[in-house]
Length: 103
Image 1: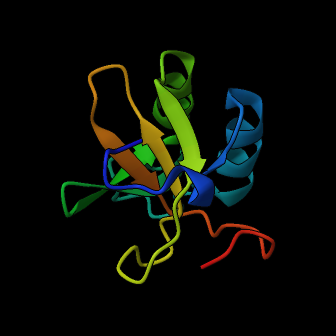
Image 2: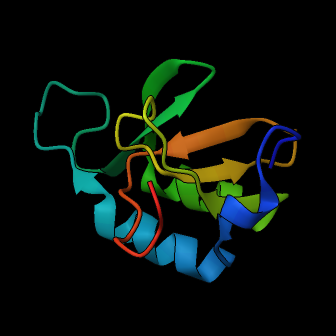
């Protein structure tokens, strides 16, 4: 996903696998004052900034993704599922990598 990443440490996912993990981690917004009230959302990070993505929006990224992988690390704050989107931007989502993925 990046020139600095050791390929032997990358654990890639298919779009279908990533969709399953995103769907399992998404939560419904229950605050009626929130603009996403009633929708399922998942938290994401990009360039150090966080925001909630609708589940629908996160799943749509997978359609044209260049790469999808588990990238756990010390500064990811639990955002281990990484998607390199069609524009070349890495989006990390708040999904913990399974135990078999080294940290």
